[in-house]
Amino acid sequence: MTVHPPVVGHCDELQHALGAFRASAHTTQRWGERLAAVLSGGGRLLAAGNGGSAAQAQHLTAELVGRYRDDRPPFSAIALHADTSSTTAIANDYGVDEVFARQVRAHGRDGDVLMLLSTSGASANLLSAADAARAAGVRVWALTGCAPNPLMAGSDESLCVEAPSTTTVQEIHLVAVHMICAAFDAALERGVRSTRAAGRAGRAAQRKRR
Image (cartoon, rainbow, N blue to C red; front, side, top):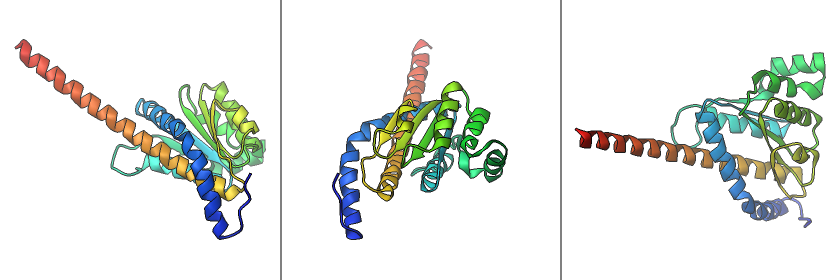
């Protein structure tokens, strides 16, 4: 793996990692499209991470409950770490490894999606959450650092960033979040256009029958 000098070398490292990650665009597109189908059908996204990855997970849910670019309806997305009362109570009563898993069992339903973000791919509380999700019929997607890692193995699908530093992995994760949101919005717009076209065709057929 290429080692870059400090400061300006960070830009070089990011550029190198981003170039490699571009090949994963088809996966982010598929995730965004699948998420559009799940959420528009009444399903929910759960997301979690630790530290900087928690911020990235919350960024994703904010884009879905609010909006990414253009105005659209809000969708159900919960950042599990953001409920401080629940996370601290669970950690106190059941241990830190259960802080996300217990919330997955509370909020997750068959057909929902759980997005887990981890630079190491080895956080015990995320691995427990993945186990709880699969048991509940919730699909697990993981954004991680270098492969292989335990979270990658414990998820239904994963995107692994090949980069030598945690900071670059987190930056690429943010790019991935925005790519997923772009695909999500595009899929919704296609669905709206398809519904409108079907409506026009139906009205035209009714006029002909008259």
